[in-house]
Length: 325
Image (cartoon, rainbow, N blue to C red; front, side, top):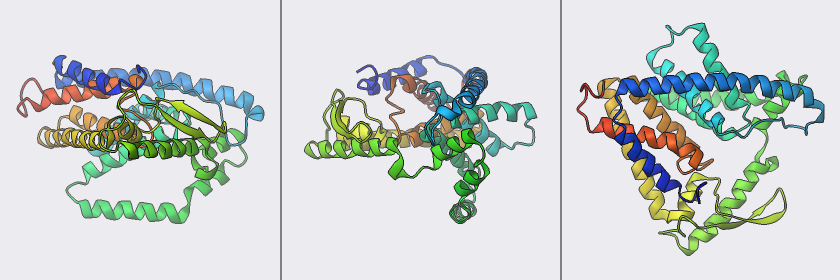
């Protein structure tokens, strides 16, 4: 229950805490900066540890796999790498120092070496959202560029190029294979798919209100070839469907869209950088939903809750007020 069952309660509790903190925009911006400094230090240590360990154990590792940590801190490394890169994309990177590029590269590499495709995918989607925010005044031009990139990706098949480039290096080859492996041979994908099939069968029995926050699901694990019963759901959308039904899922999506509108409108009016960071945080957590319960997992929900609470506070203040700026 503490891990996920009470995730909604914790989320709204942290939203209330964030609102009651009454921080200013400048204080929130300093909090983002200090957390990023801590994450950069962690990412540097993590990269040295993981690379050294894998190079020492590379001959004893299974094919297409590498040693890595399952730390939730790596989730935040991906988040803050996306926020910093996205901010530079919107505001311009001509003033960025080489040391700043190095620091953000540490965060991005730590996210990659987490081995989590969900973290890397959410990071890329968030950066794309920043790109769209910059080009919003010219949506047709942005759509053409995204379409061109998609066609180039499909034609050039960069995954094949990466595999050829890393063919002589077992460690780098294992890292690349981790991200380009086909779904049919990926046990993580098969496990999530099997769990979602079982959740969908349960949802059919109570489609509108779900089975409650303490509900569990029995699903077939293709890795251990056994049936598993768990209250933990690896998919944020599956979590909402199982626990709260279609009505809860729809309500939560409306809830998210309201926060997106508030963050977008206030940023367009004030151009306050902290609102751009809040918008990016929303995009990162939302894009993570199909992969994991980012809003409802105890170790992750505290940050988005505090951020949304601050956004509620900013939304109740007139643009340009002393409290906001």
